Amino acid sequence: MSESMYKNPQEPKKQEEERKKRNKKGLFIFLGILAAVILIALLAITFTPKGETSLYREEPFSSGTQNVAKIYIEGTIEEDGATYNQEWVTGQIRNAMYDKDNKGIMLVINSPGGTVYESDETWQRLMDYKKETNRPVYAYMEQMAASGGYYIASPADKIFINRNGITGSIGVIGGMSLDASKLMEDIGIKADYIHTGDNKVMGNLFQPMTEEQRNIMQQMSDEAYGQFIDVIAEGRKMDKEKIKTLADGRIYTAKQASENGLVDGVGEYEDFEQRMIEDQGLGDKVRFVDKEYKKAASFWQSMLGAKGESVMKALSGDKISATMETLNELKIDEPMYLYQK
Image (cartoon, rainbow, N blue to C red):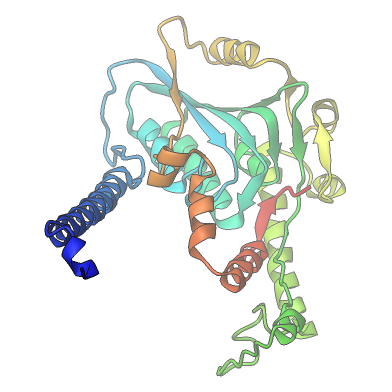
């Protein structure tokens, strides 16, 4: 008897049903993955940071409560960072200026400084506030108020510092150029710039800096340094030559800063707040209102924590692109009032 006679006639049907089950299971898995991707995309859109929205006033108004605006200057001074946003800071100063119930500004600074542009713009807005309102500005330095942090504090009527705080670092980082031409050569990459003007592409990663270009950057640094000296001289009523003896870039302890005239005193914040109340005759009805910038977390930060965003970026890029991005981030393309360890 042949072997085919013993085959189960139902076998082909069972195989077909099993194949259909596998196909259906695969379809469900695919649809599940697709739904997850769509959900993640929708969440990403929902949680994409829009920035902190705040109403910045351009005309007089009444907040309804006698107040001192307690504005926190936190982290690196830049256009938009994790703890500092330039538009927000200058907006808070404007709000205080137009608020008829405002009695003054208290700056609470914990910053190593930052860009020359943002530091000086904040200084100008504080000077505008003082000129337009004739109200006091006080500044309290926490752990650090160095370089641009001190620059912003300089127009204050009184400056106090925590006894463990650090200040000073009066100087300028004019720029920092990285020459990666040898690295590029070793990995077989050559870049040719088509440009008009010898210094048009100065500071790029693929060419060493010339002596002329170094002189250009040095002149920019010197101008920013002179501006820093002028700002301190105006705010602290100090002789410029004396300031220059202090302004060699070094940092100062609280005790040293008090002795050389960079601050008015050393102490705890609560004591300094009370001193402002007494100095200005503010009375018991005036409230110190916290103004602290809070940046919305990105989607990946919300889902994976503080390191989530950088992890996802690392996973999505190739090694060469990541290396070039890192090198570019290390460059300093503009003058900085910044303390670097």
